[in-house]
Length: 424
Image (cartoon, rainbow, N blue to C red):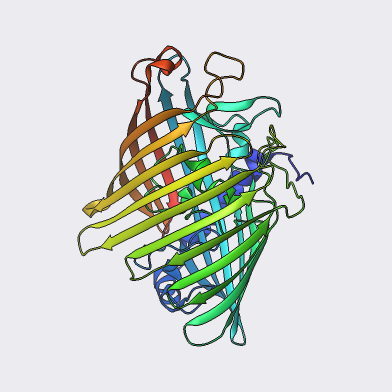
């Protein structure tokens, strides 16, 4: 099913600007009052616990977005637009200006004792073209339907989420729910990187993305789950195929994959999850290969009077049909200082087996890649609910001698950026 592609740049940019301008005119007091009373979509707990899809984060994590009531509905808008210039070193690096973006609408209302939530999310990224942006050692998906993307990060699709959640309370702290999406996120992996406090300021998608949270845009998914106070158990059936190079499409297929996830929030500062899933034919270029994925993660958020910080640790394992399993480890941390200054970092260790073309001397061999990133973001202005910031970050990679000829002795990446986002 092909979405309308006519004049995508103008239409989407005007839509994003209109939302930002409207948000800047709302009353801050009304926003504060509505956010205080909002509970979660899946149960009776603070809304700050909820993140991408049906995933959880610590209750202490901040809720970034603009909240306001409309009749019987409680609405939230969350959006950001980031302009980036990146320089990736070496023979396989590149320089490019690009943008990343997201606009999300979240609407919730009560139906008797039950709760109905509608969610929609779009991105401007398809306007950049199917090849995305340069990112050393990143792999996954394709830009032309023939060759895989290597050393580049693919753009997100225009339609990132179109889903509904219906929850029914069993007692004061217990509930059952169903989540269904034309575009949505099954119960597999941690909170998607774009929605994590630790990853949000980082302009690079994690190299471990396809071991942890690459199913966050799935065209066709249903999740059934139950909440017992601080514990959530859920199972999903979904379309396991990742989006193709046509970023304006909605690519519906039958439910051929499944997943299950257990999440535990023992205290407001903590959130932990383990999940596993079977993805049937996730890659367009390898339709006969299925992948069994296992993930585990822990998030800790500290909200002090002067400093706020969060740390995220995750492990992911992919076991493709007839191929050796590969692993990824990820550590992220972010520290917010006074006066709107944010320091952040990321360390990854990944087994990459698709960096070199098949048939070459080392084609198909898994290479251990270590990437270390550090960055800073500084708020520079705020108008109503629109906050502007600027930042810079740099990355260093550790690779073996077998890759030095292709990537150089000490490959690095550096980026500068400006960002506007909607805030409470």
